[in-house]
Image (tube, rainbow, N blue to C red):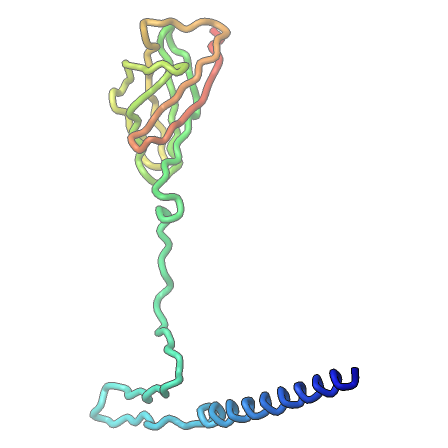
Length: 175
């Protein structure tokens, strides 16, 4: 047992000596760099307009030059996502539904398709409605297949934009 302790002690002493030697070599290599003065000193003569810079040491790390703060483009974060919603649904005739579309986004929303209870609407007024950025617009839809509104029935409205965004809402017809 004593031999094991003796062997471990010798190993520890050797490690301490090796670390001490390595540490002193590292200090002797880095200390001159820390205390070094530039090899060239900037001078300015009255006829010179350029400001000379000292040459970098071989171990120096490159530095970034200051730049203006970057500008933030919102489309990077939201991917130019359309931000539209159906704000109101009004039943204005036995087969006609008026939909108020609110666009809170920063791009114009172009509506290309409309559905009432999952059935495609073929009559939309205006025919190709678009709602400008930060604006609202009304789209009039006629029920498909010459249908008429039925009291107490819930009608689900889905509008699809040119970018594929689906805007949905529903309301119950109570005349």
